[in-house]
Each structure stands twice: as C-alpha cells, then as structure tokens.
Image (cartoon, rainbow, N blue to C red):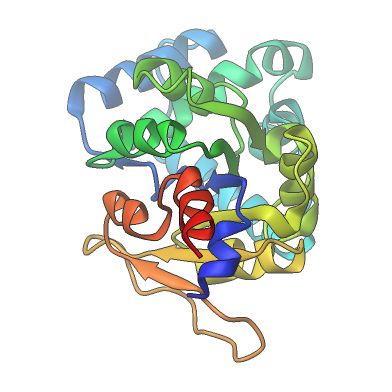
Length: 256
C-alpha cells in the first residue's frame, strides 16, 4: 500500500454487521424477542408457520432492496411487506420496535474482538472515525454503540435506514464524508463484503477500501478486476499496522 495514500487519510469509516460486531445465538434474547413482538402486535399466540411466513416476506423485500438499492422505512417494511394483512394503524406505530425485536430473534449482538481497543487507538493516533451500514433498523446500531461503549469514537453514523439508500450505492459513503467535512479522497473504509463495501466506497471516491475476513464468515463475493482491494486484514487490530499515528508522517518528512 503506497505510504503517500495512507498519509493522506483523515477519516476511517467502518461497516458494522460482521465487521465491528456479530450476532450469536442466545436463547434468553431470542425468547424475549418473540414475547416482545407478540406484545407489540397485541397477540397472545400465533398459528404454526407464522414466523416462517414473515421471514419469507422479508426475504422478498430484501431481494427487492438489494436490486433497487432503496431502503424503505421500518413502517413501510412492516405495513407493506411483512404484515399487509394487519391493520396499518396497529402496525405502523410499533414498526421500529418490531424491527429491533425481529433481529433479536436470531440472538444477541456482541462486539468483535479488539473493537474498542482499536477504535480508541485510531482516535488517539489522530484519525476521525465513522460508521456506514446497511440496516433495516433505526434503533439497533445506536443501541449497540451505547452498549459497547463506542459513543465517544464515532463522529458520524450513517445508516441506510436514515439515508434511504443502500450500499454499494455511493450516497451513504458520500453522506459520511460530508458529515465530517472530509473529501472522499482522504477517506478509508473497512468492511467484510467486497461488493457492498470495497466497490461501494471506491465508487464514491474513497482512497482506500479494506476487507476484513473472519474465519466464521462465508467466502466474500467474487473479486472484480476493475476494483482493487487495497488491503485484507483478519482482525481489527491489524488496522494499527496500516494506519500509524498522523504525526508519524510529519516527523518522517521533517527528517528528510
């Protein structure tokens, strides 16, 4: 990786799901999520196959969203796609809570090893940090930021649920750079998906697109020759080998 490019980096942005955190099975969380959804919908129980029906409907929405790169609101997803047969006035006010609980049906989220330490080190080294994530929930990631103690590290949190456009479209990346008043050419991005993360950030003009590969994740999308992966790391702490303290470059130039 050319040192000149790294020296120009002012901001580092992160994908969230699969990159900074992961979801693991956790029976108490999953049971509580089911109970919460029943409560929100005013139901004591549901017929066999009910949750599977909702999952199939959500899969249809996901397919449409991935093709169009449009992110609908939680209200639109639940009233138009998942529960079109329920009274809209019942579903719409609780759609955000339903979406949060729906994710928790699969378990609880935990931070990736070294997440907090790496974020702290990068901030200490002089880099500005932000998040850019595809998510259907407006509540899920902000809650993780608070739960994991990440509040003081991210100056910008750009979610597809907020900007209404999904990665790999350039808009979320450009919105993040604009939020920090940093030119895209001075930004780097770390994610775990080639198409959504590396291709997306490069289309937006980011200088560096970095992949993170964890052993517990499926293979990444097929690489495309028109887009270059600038680096591949296997842990968050490896970022500290790529991004030295910002004053390192000033000291190096001063010695020349």
